[in-house]
Length: 337
Length: 158
Figure 1 (cartoon, rainbow over the protein chains, first blue to last red):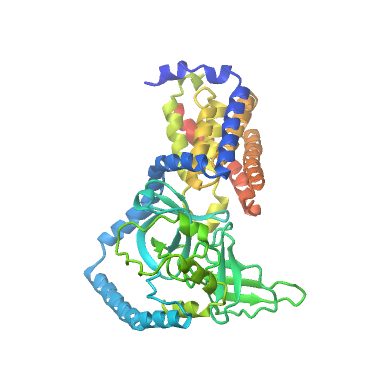
Figure 2 (cartoon, rainbow over the protein chains, first blue to last red):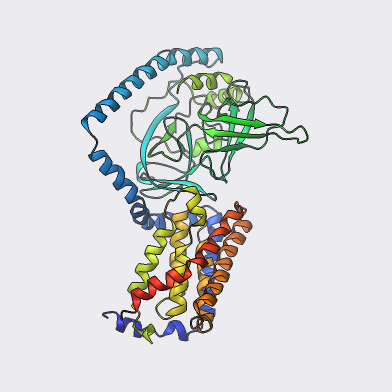
């Protein structure tokens, strides 16, 4: 009732023809779409709008977060103890696995004729909560609760503890959008750990499945093969576990085999993911030189000071090491998880 | 008659709720058949009370949907403006029709909406998806009587 007057004051909607209004809105939409195809203004408009939309995203994700918060609250002492014991066991196992890691890393560097100390690949990581997940046929995306203010940047690699999750496609002030590797528009260059065979893994909108559409029937790929990133796309470093081949159906009449793989990362159930910064001097960092130049430096954190060698010869060394088949870092990464 | 009494606030709130319900994260199978409630609610308001609805609501809701969905900026805004335009243009024709006939109009409107999105996806070299994207057109039209019942209860207290 209080708004009855307001309703009466706006007789224009019906009386003014909707035609011209539609043309105005259609024109605005088309201009927006045009700019969104290009970087620059579209990104800036979206950046602002993303801040406005973040509360809505939080509200949508809140039932799930509320549920997990309450279930945390009622967790019993016994179950916490059990979890603690399990975690300790896992930590021991991981410690055993990584015991010789550093020695192997240096040995690997020596074998590949890289002089100087190889810094750790991941110079910094940022833990983020998944506040909203959009896992449909058309798109496979997460919204995470860290953004520009935490230093995240576009096309940053995102992993969880099991493997590759995806990359950041849009970064807002306090939130960012992760395109998962299973998104129909996502493709990641991969390599078979067993034999170094390189191909591309493409998402198809199913969170439990990746496809390898460009594998000839003669290629040596079989179920159980571990796929890791090959580092060729320029976004992900080499050697991050991506998926395990589930089946390879070969039809002799066809040129290409139908290969399906299962992602290593638990995409449907992930609640926390890690955004990574890489040390540009490490040989396994993304090879795209344009991207490396554009990468913002890692914000203050437990970063390792870069080794004291002259930067000019580094890109050359990287370029020389990358095109050669590099099963070594892949094999090292395979044993890590 | 009671079109005059419609408060814009009620429109905004219902549109916001519909917006949130239409971007709700859902299991795979459910998300295919999940109707696009935002389009239905916008259709409802622009058909039954064109003064309170208006194209601006459709446009802004579409723009928010673009940001939430991560689709191209302006894509859903365009499609929703188009549907709102059609609804406003034809509201005198459709509003007095029996519910079955209205459902037919809604089916066409949803088809136009998804068709616009599909075409814009194609123009901009995005993935145009599979047949599953069209399923919600049918389910949306099927629940139209429910939407009319619910929203009608909200805005015409008797």
